[in-house]
Amino acid sequence: MELIEFIRESIKEDVGPGDYSSMSCISASAKSKARLLVKDDGIIAGVELAMLIMQEIDSELEITVLINDGSVVKKGDIVFTVSGKSLSILKAERLLLNCMQRMSGIATTTTAYVEKIKHTSARILDTRKTTPLNRYIEKWAVRIGGGHNHRFGLYDMIMIKDNHVDFAGGIAAAINAANRFLSENNLSIPIEIETRSIAEVEQVLQTGKVQRIMLDNFNPEVMRDAVSIINHRYETEASGGIILDNVAAYAETGVDYISIGALTHSVRSLDLSLKAFK
Image 1: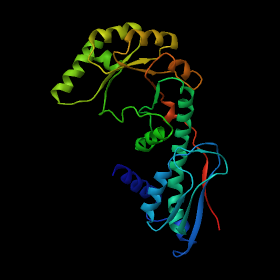
Image 2: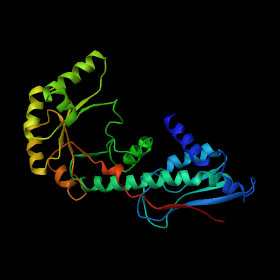
Image 3: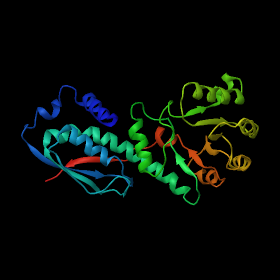
Image 4: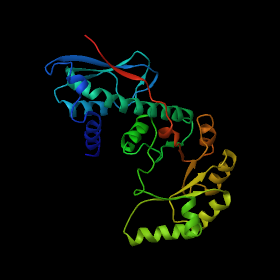
């Protein structure tokens, strides 16, 4: 339902009272064919979403999928063809391209990170650094690219970060307060806490009552020490300063998860176009 609402609101934003450009020069009864062309090499994502967009606009559009989500694509590939009313195809064009180009860029970037660490057991996570109101589809694209989703929002995990620790009066105070809150509100969600040094890791271990420890802005050498100290008692997550060139070094420390904000906040969209054909 959330996805359909996103599609409807996006159509409303783009079309408004009508696609006057198309309506002014194309007959309402005209029919055409179009195909989605790939103009970049990468990972395709958003095909399933594009189908939903076109069906929402016109259930009579006929769509033939040639390449599925998650597939490797290269310049010149045709992902799908669509035939039906010309006005319907044109109405869907910009929205499906905007979504697919963004999603494919995210999937392509995610796959690059996943490939770098495939020789380890670490898993790549996204973050909440997403485009407002586009989080669902951007996190979907991360999964298509082989990554995993971190918490979806502020409500499905307690993540105690540096400001929480400082405002609460320390690590033990913050953890104890979080557990008390969960008990008082009859909530069952995991607790993760961010640490900034080995000393803070040791404070967390003394307190316990969390499910995951984030190791924030540690270099690989210090992270290896932290992972060893934690010794599988809690899940571990690396975060901060991690890029494609050094992600393997972090994964090789034995950390369980590596969160990468760049998967969604600074990717380059994959170049795609929807073109008419006979």
